[in-house]
Image 1 (tube, one colour):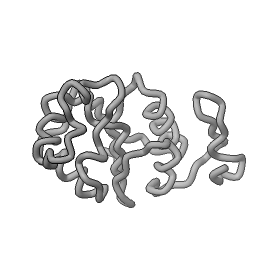
Image 2 (cartoon, rainbow, N blue to C red):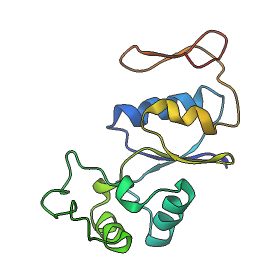
Image 3 (cartoon, helix red, strand yellow):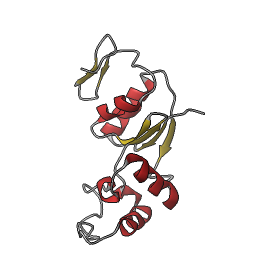
Length: 140
């Protein structure tokens, strides 16, 4: 079992780039397709706490029921926002990565480099061709 977990959406380019950056270290992470297997309430609150962010910062607005549910209401509590994420997992922004060095919402994808325990093993370019890691394994 890997000591790295990614809450992943294979339809998301950022999520695919983060997964590829993890694998570029030689690690084989535990991949949780969170739309098929959403985290439970306790896990979601634990992830939010580990990231040190308010629940609102984990909400995904684009291509979700965010507006229809009125989630821009500043009076909604973290409990109320998490309840909506549990009902509608598509509201959970991605990818979330957990490693021994920390837990982060990896947007942009390069954020994952700050919490990977192993160095990059090869040059890495995002799917759109943007360079991320050079031939010395350093962030570009």
